[in-house]
Length: 314
Image 1: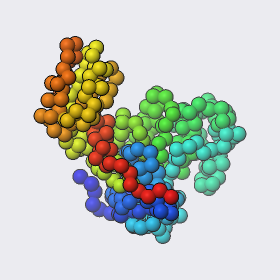
Image 2: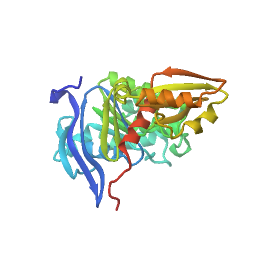
Image 3: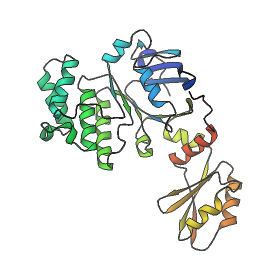
Image 4: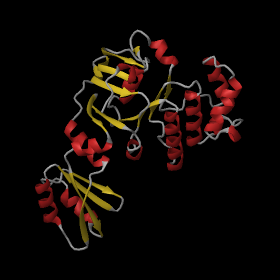
């Protein structure tokens, strides 16, 4: 259950709208996020996730709506919010011609941190950067750049961490290490809102929010979102599944047909119609099994229901 005590909410915003000219990027979104949790922001490119994050932390003024971040008004107390927030952008935004340590020293001076050397040693140690601290940031791989960026945005111990697709383009081990560190930070009282396209990352979150066409389509735990999708899903395995995919496309009841590895998932909101579609294309060598819909199945359904993006483009 979502907390209702305003003091227990890290983010409490209502009716947020952001327009750029005649384009509406965010259209009336509410978000009430308790402190100390990890929430996932999901949605296709252009759905409004980055714009929401920037409004929440005071980097963008809202066109309409109101609310607080860490108890401070997002319109009138922007500087207070910025001092207490860490924001990691999609694109690596540190200095490639400086070493890891020099980058962190620069950021520490911006924050006017006390005992700067000890603070840098601490964050470098936590993120496994000690042996690389003299390496130029421009020579780092994607995973190591990610660690540097995380060190830089958390060294001032923010109360709220906003991460905008932080693991795009890094390998699976680096993503796993990153998430281990995120959950470690929450044990120290940090609140984390992270936008992602990865379903396995979404499943690591306490709660997920799905945006499409600038609107919030759904919110809840992974189990809640899957259940509310109302989908029934069957899994096909065997030598003939690739042929079945084309035959199932467009059939009544087979609302969503997608590959999962070497298997095929068929999902639909009408169970009887879905089973009839499967019977029509059944063939030897293919085994069908009822399965729990995946989060990806649910999101494909959500996108279908959201329909075409009719927001005006400038």
